[in-house]
Image (cartoon, rainbow over all chains, first blue to last red; front, side, top):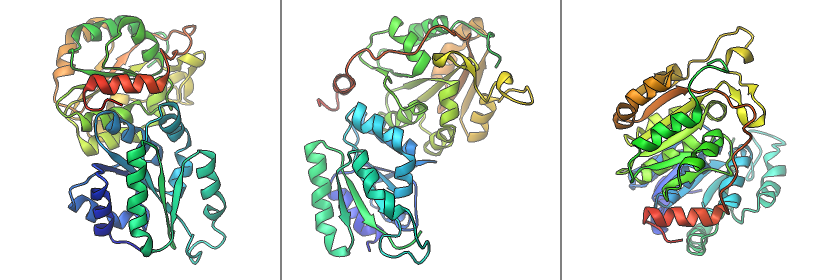
Length: 161
Length: 204
């Protein structure tokens, strides 16, 4: 749907300094483009770590974004609860929505069952991105989250596991 | 380590307080946070209460990356460390020279009543102990220490803090089974705002 260069350009427009990430087959290939554009990649070992690393970056004056798959969102629960809700640190995210576009790899993938309810349960506002025509909408949404000092997620539809 | 061995936690923290620079950030979690607030009220103290257990090392990494000219000292426990062992690898992947992790190892989940952790002989079928310093070394920490007594810690604290990081030091401390958990020193969002203002990079 998007190239790494396009995502990097979007992040730069919004002033993102660091991307804290665990890859999947959609967001992972963006890494080269992001790093090539001068946005610092912080590769973490599990997604729960990402929110605390991003929190430290934010407190220290940087402008981080967490980039993970929805399965990693599920893994992140207590960490994001603490960072986004206890401390009210406005960490934005890009979350890959596994199997949204097709379920060829994982028929019956329960990511389709749980992703949006989990986002709602953790009170994370989000914008669902299902096609490349929403590129500017993505940038506008992320910029608005940053300007408002609110966490928000760009949930990017994926078709592969 | 075995529960019951080691130096008193509060005494170990007093040694750190005396050696800390005014510009250092100190991030304290769990039992260390409970004791640190009794000793220090510095604007660059980040009392990580409430926390998501295990995330102090990760938060310290982010802070160290964002503030490369400032020393960041993380006070962590062995139970918290076990919840986020991967962070050792994440830290060394970034290799911040200004990050010091002090692991206060008492062998138990102290704040819940001193149940043994899975890393201590009392919590392991084989009766052996996990070597946290060895884990740090294998993960790629540049400087690794193990301090078993207050005398050793007092004698080497400057060396530990001044070492080229990322630095990892294990301090064997005595468990305090009845000490309870840490208490939040105030509303978390307000403390975050004050902390950022003290760093001088964000006012809100």
